Length: 194
Image (cartoon, rainbow, N blue to C red; front, top):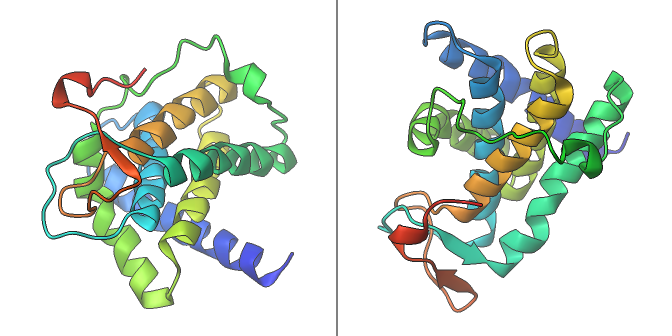
């Protein structure tokens, strides 16, 4: 294992340990919520890593070529993390799972309100780049999928995670991104992700 891998694994462990007490504040938290929230934060953090910060931007769908290129790395890293845990899945295994983040008890905005400070504070304290934090959160998502396997089928959980990655990668956090030449806005009427 190289230094970067060790750093990502350590950050993933930190996020899991830090998120659990936050999730525990909610009664009867579901596996779907834990997985969707962690995956959404991976996507959100990746989005932030590829877009310059701005003072104010209403939450909306923003398509970024760079996020589109780097976003699939979240899924690949999650699948690679699951393999040594005994869950050899491919993207084909995730198709047909009828999964989305709709079963989550938190929507994207609530997820960010709950977890944002933990992620950003850890990045600042450890000088972890936002991109590396996103990758660590993809690892964290895989660890939660493994830990929740008795409550939720691993294939379905991984499919939920993919939806969470996409949601986070496409929706600008308020005040966290700036529209630049490589971004295209999608009107609020088209906020539904498909």
